[in-house]
Length: 348
Image (cartoon, rainbow, N blue to C red; front, side):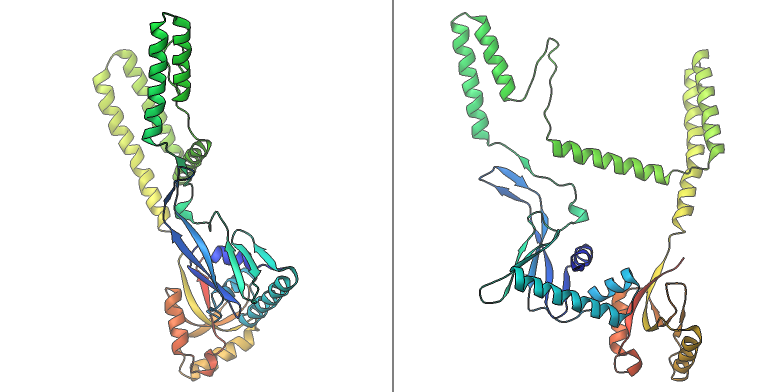
């Protein structure tokens, strides 16, 4: 079973290029918003995908994704990727094409070169989510429709017939998208996609505020209830001016602790860092002996890493993935680091 498509789609959310070692690379391209004159539609911006068969060098990005998902070693992840690429080549040779879901379709040309047709909807992009196309008629068409409606109403008025005039007015209103009743109410027609996007945005805002509101602040809720009762009593007593000032001050005092509590929760966000893995899935005694040997060689930053699926011997502590790869490249001359790979650690 080919699982490359799942990893490629997820990696393209954060990266502009994903390389399949020995096969080719998928690259994203930004397409600006445009106007389709034939359909008279304004189309939103999107990210599309291209395929370059010349990119065959392993950049370890896809391998790192397999390591994190399946908790396997670097050689095992590389071997699994190679097996799936061989299966992909076999499917292309037998069937002539293969569809990568949500990415595009690969096919074999007459000269044996791989061809790629990207997905029409483009790759999933969070910053462009919810944008849809919309139609805007030309001013000339609108003016022509208005002139025809006006001439129809004028001709019916000259004949002195009220019912045809009323029918013409009704037809004009239906053309312009306006419906009138006895109270002259107006209804605006909206696209279903626009309503769906607005509803999704409202649900996201409600979920955000519901998650950020403290649930265990019962004393504040009781205080708020007492404030509302006192305001109601003052309203019944006729003391309107004193009620407004008291309500504003008490509401500010109740809201302030909630803001401070949100800030306190924000400080407990988990931090992560990157390190170089030198050995994985080894016994604790062998790992301890290996670390001691590395310390004798002057590699004082070597240590044991436990609690992440297996016992690992790691080196260094780097805040970013780029800095970790840079350090691994600088240490590639040492035999100890030839099979090293980058691992992300999330502190709990």
